[in-house]
Image (tube, rainbow, N blue to C red; front, side, top):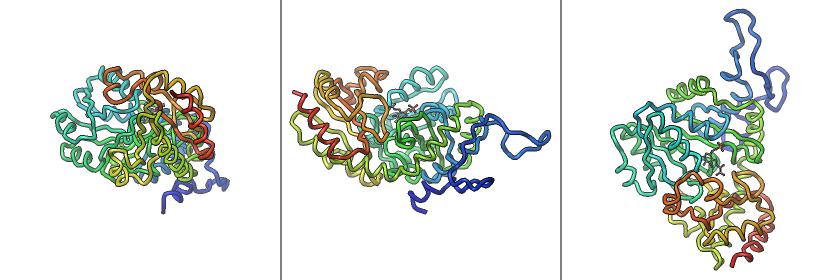
Length: 380
Ligand code: P1T
């Protein structure tokens, strides 16, 4: 089965009881048992929920894994994956990534005996140099939030296999439609499903998939034992949304490509970061490991004043955190999503006061382009 067929059919067979074509929403916390020790396989809704199971089954198929597990948010998913590790273990992480992931590592998990090295994963030498005998996980985002840099997934998978570490990939920006890390050697892939998987800016959700049965068992244990599970409504909404993921992603990417190409020609724009541009230093790698370049663009405007002028002049792009919805958003990473990354580290990465991030929606491309054009006229 091809991607779009899986998105619409896997886990979504008509309901056995009624024939309902849409997966029913099982809004229940518990299930009646016939007698002590005798039940239908459903006991308590933290442990199992049929709507959630159907969504997990679908997402596992889309990521080409053996199983998937859903969580209350992207960060809850990341936190649960980190609990596969033991105190004393070391993690090599991409230095450019969502600020909340950095905060979870440095302000929470490091208090429980995990240690972290943050490296520029564009250079494999940096990963090699960070390896210690305690390294048990290599964790990356690709493309990264917000600098749109790529990790060579096959190359990192080779290193993690060699040293016996888990390779974890946050696939939020690409979505499984454009990139499937498990097929390139990653052990675990995860998402903030709040973004493209949910796709309509109306839910907060996370999901983890793996290609190994032994890891699936451990993640399932943690899902229940830690309990950071989503409500059934979010699972139901994700199932509904994922049916159109392929259509939305194609449009996000086509719109973003047009806007990125136009922005690159403008003298008021210092730099455009988008993997679909031939000028992106990792464009070739993007072509190899992704089947499309996504809807996220970062733009360097030179100063906070220019960023303010641009974002307040935009009319269709709403100034807001988050991304991946059908409507276009603009974000100022320094003050919004990446405030928890220390200033010197942020600036070294290019996350400057003048950087703005566009989540290009699926509105009409001309309308979006006109909006960006009139807003840029306010930038000196
Ligand atoms: O917000 P939550 O669903 O908990 O997901 C966290 C998260 C994880 N990974 C990536 C790549 C993310 O971008 C996020 C959340 N990011 C934003 C809210 C943002 O605007 O960048």
